[in-house]
Image (cartoon, rainbow, N blue to C red):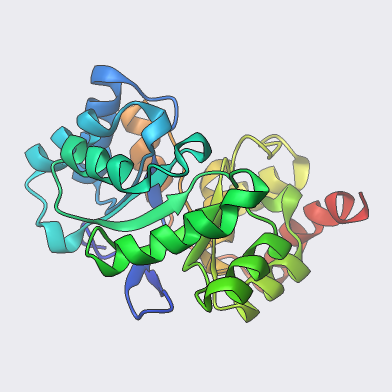
Length: 265
């Protein structure tokens, strides 16, 4: 696969979002710069950051130095909930730090106080229409909260970014999210996975890949966006190398079954 040819999913507005991206949470300073550059060099085109990560300037510098054309990139940043009421100033600061005229996706990082949820979303819609972002979405929102936004504004988030892994698999959440026209994006794919689980090891050995690669391939085949994070160039490259194998139906069902415990709670 050529760099930048990552399979993608269509958002409600027709924009395409890569199914595999690079997460930058907890990466700061030169580590954030070097890791983002390594990801871009390998072929990642979705880069995920946030105001609260404190690394937008380093991520922006890595993007600029990479030489990747802007129209081949998909850049996400997020508004902290305590910045509700300061949406325009926050996105302007983010764009300045990133060195971009707009982001491809801007998310409400966590739901703000109940009385501010709809007002914040109304500002997001207005600022998207003003050209600050191509698409807007949310992170860590429940289906009830998404429905509240839709009822109040008629605008569904393009994306809901939530923790996701085989252990958190819930087909009803996935189905209900898609019914609302929202793309599910999963973060912390490894944090919530026992990468030494015997079933996972057996599947990885069968395909001669790592268990982490199996987890990411599972996301991709469910058409759930995954954004693994690493500061190690070899691991960054390994996480992107999931396009040369495919999980069969039985293997997918095995991994889906990891989520049964979560659904019972």
